Image: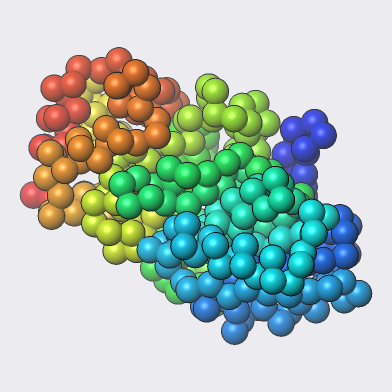
Length: 360
């Protein structure tokens, strides 16, 4: 097992990464404040890991709520199912929620924890690659609105993040590829050496080589933890983690949540950001080609959906939560491994990107 630390003073917490961690109650019990534990999971994960997770909390009052699976259920109606379960079981403000599942479960459980009785503890137990390397770390919680992704939420840090890499054994191939999009992101925004590693080792990750997956998860979490520790509430450099996300969130909302997986939409979005970076004079054609090769090797899309027009994109991007003073702020690349945030770019170049970077 490897352990990293998210250094946030009194809100610091460990990230444990390793095989067989869902059999180690000593990693979980110290993070339970009171006597009550509510496990939140979904219909896909529950048959695989719910009973194993319940067994970790012997001696506590344990309940669970099983939500429908899918990004389309990441909304206020589903959130209320968690509140219903907590209130019906009379869970108090010293209870602990456990998010057992992928990014949707982590985000919605974290938001429930942030708001139930004005805030209770929670533990992240991510079971998808995307959640393990990104959404489980950093305390961003929330739900979607029909007009925008993650528009309703709060910052609420977990007590710990416990990543059992064995859960990837049951992850379908499409979800594994979607998770690799966020892994690749770290190489693009701040870790060129890691990007070069991925150029060589993506086939090993796709083949589920356990050592290589553990390394990629650890390196990704290390990058995320460093950024979060420096900028917990996204006042500055944490925004770099949003490379491709303004484009990608538009794809998710425009196509209907769940049609494109988050990682698929973000991959296409990162290529759009890369193309705009090229138009801005930063990236070369060969840089863009390297990016495309990596995403295609990971079985990820490099172009946005044919159904979405530039007008569709601009309308949805204008409603993104990263818009400030009417300007769509984007994360662009000065080079592979070096990202920056800006609202200062010629609008015509954004429009050219939306028109030109499409499937030929």
